[in-house]
Length: 162
Image 1 (cartoon, rainbow, N blue to C red):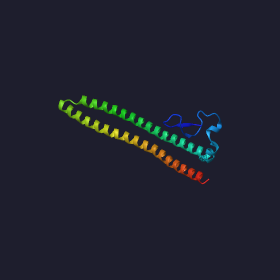
Image 2 (cartoon, rainbow, N blue to C red; image 1 turned 45 degrees about the vertical axis):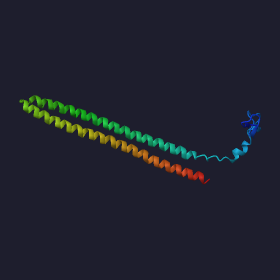
Image 3 (spheres, rainbow, N blue to C red; image 1 turned 90 degrees about the vertical axis):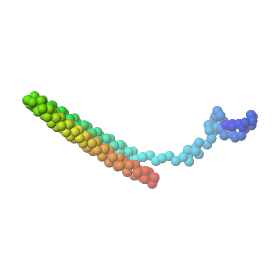
Image 4 (cartoon, rainbow, N blue to C red; image 1 turned 45 degrees about the horizontal axis):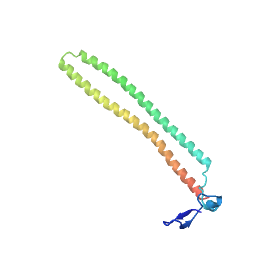
């Protein structure tokens, strides 16, 4: 038996189990322990597999939405770059045809103002596109998460009633 000794050598306070154990009897009555232990019910495997499949389908759909959004942003960014290059070429042509220094300065200020306004509008447009794409993907994930929580609740109620 396991000996817990007091501060006085040679005295024993309690006898629990022999240490090291010499036989299975030294471990105590584990059959009683395991008989009283409640094991959780096994989940419905078909429901579990179906829920996992729906989770994966939702993740795939959300990734597809995010990818399509990123591709749309990249296409629009390329269009903006091409448009900017065309506008810059036209602006350079307009500046070189202006004769007086005052007219050139006025033209440059006008072009700079236009370029700034255009850049701000383009940044806002791209930001809105990204935000819309992210919102769509997040909506899919949130909807599936809510459904999954409802499924878990139903499985818990089902297994508790057994």
